[in-house]
Structures are given as C-alpha cells and as structure tokens.
Amino acid sequence: MTAAQSYLLLGLRLGRHVDGLVDSYYGPAELKAQVDAEELVPPGQLVEDASALHGSLDDGYLRDLVHGCWTYARVLAGEGMSYSDEVEGSYGVRPQRTPEAVFERIHAELDALLPGHGPLEERRRAWRDREITLEPEHWEGLAHAGPGPDDDAENAALLDAVRDGIRTALTPRQRQVLVSAVLEGVPIDVLAERLGSNRNALYKVLHDARRRLREHVAAAGFPEVSE
Image 1 (cartoon, rainbow, N blue to C red):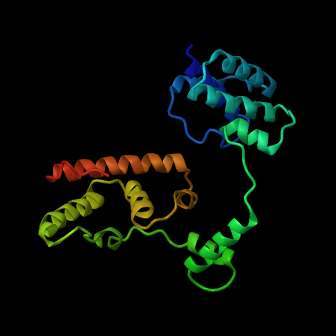
Image 2 (cartoon, rainbow, N blue to C red):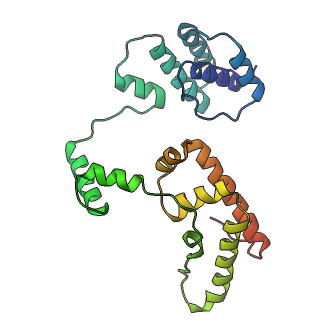
Image 3 (cartoon, rainbow, N blue to C red):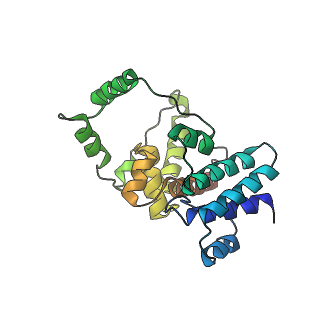
C-alpha cells in the first residue's frame, strides 16, 4: 500500500469518529468501502498509525497532511493540548490574537455596507438570508465593459454566447451556483448553507459549470476565451 493510500485510510477512519470531518471524498471507492465495513478504530490506535506514517515520510505536503491527522487523533484520544497547539499541529500556522481595533474597523465597514437600519447582526442575517433566485434577468443583463466602441460587435456576440451557454449548456444546479456565486456575489459559505451543501461540493459544481460554459463559448466561435 502506498503512503497516499495509508493517508486516505487514516483520514476516513478519523472521519468515522466525527461527522463532517471528511466533507467530501473523491479517492478510490474500495478504500472508503473498506473503512465503512470495518470496526471503528479506537483513537489511540489512530494516534499510533498516524505517528508511524508520519515518521516514514520525507518533508513535504503529504507529511504535513498526515501531521494534521496525527494532531487530531491525539485530541480525540484525550491528549491535553492548547487551542493554539491544536491549530498549529492541524494547519501548520499558529494563531495570533487579533487586536480589538481590527474588529471595530471591520464592524464599521460592514455598518456602512449593509443596507437597512438596526443592529448590525440583524442586518447581516437579513442580507445573508435574502432569496437566491434563478430568474433569467440575473444573467440576461450581462453588460459589456470593454475598452472602446470598435470591439462592441464582437463583445456583443461573445456575451450572447455566454448568455446562451448559461441558459442551455448548464444543469439547473450549475446555473444556480454560477449565477449566485459569480454574478450575484453570494459568498460560497452562505450559498452552501442555503443549498444544504458544503464548500467543496459547490466548488466542484462551479468548476464543472465553468468548463461547460467555456466549451459552449468555444463552439460558438470564441475558442480563446478563458477565465
């Protein structure tokens, strides 16, 4: 078994202890089936497995990932660890305390940006919970912002191809995610919560939507268009 496969098994076994720890998985199906079928591996054993795998790897990305799993396994096993140590062990970055003045400045910026009156949190929640729609005007209104009139005809044709691609080449789910995240600027975390999904799944939908849209636009005679 390769080191990468051992890492996947380690992560999947940790994920059985905590819902949502593995929020998406695209690795070999047989590894997931193996973990789903076996008895729950105790945290102490996962600590030993992670330690052994970590010690067998050279410095690099995979070793860093295993170190994160090792750290989390130790937490699950009941090892006393400060929050800062846990974060650093999991992500390789030690958290620093943020001065209150930073939050005050950000709150002031949000206060100026969010519409309405009343407490900031209520306005933020109202903005976040606003309706996500799929009405055609959300993409039919795409406007040209090119450098000058000489290229208006070509850009108009390109925008027609983009609008047609959004309307005909995408699945309803792809259209919803693309329009909401790219055209309307809905944060991906907010969109994930509203759609009952997660960031990774929506990024995959967005990636596939952009690929389909590029293919459609290329077939319409604009092969050099890129993001």
